[in-house]
Image (cartoon, rainbow, N blue to C red; front, side):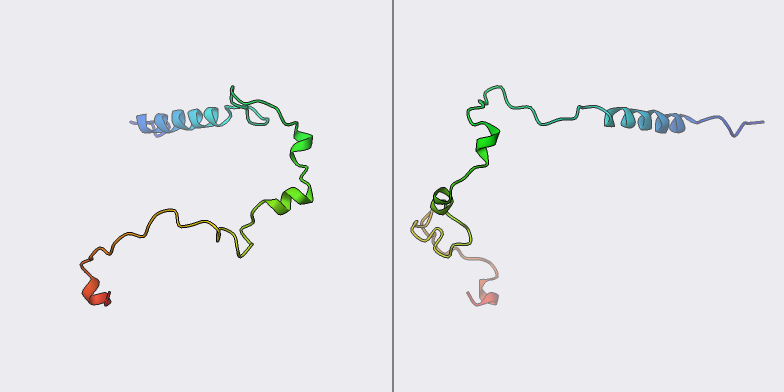
Length: 91
């Protein structure tokens, strides 16, 4: 007679993997991110958020319609390459 209460190897594997997942999920610590060793705290956090109106006006904005108009294209326009579907597309 076999007992239905004994666990098979796959049952033990599920239990071990579940316990490992729960143990690893608790790893770590709460708090802010650590700064890299080469980072310097030259600007105190209290002054980092202060911008004057003149500084804000001098910064470019994506909502400005002239944003990027004064700069030329980043690369010259390339030549036309043929594509297998060009006759079908009419290009």
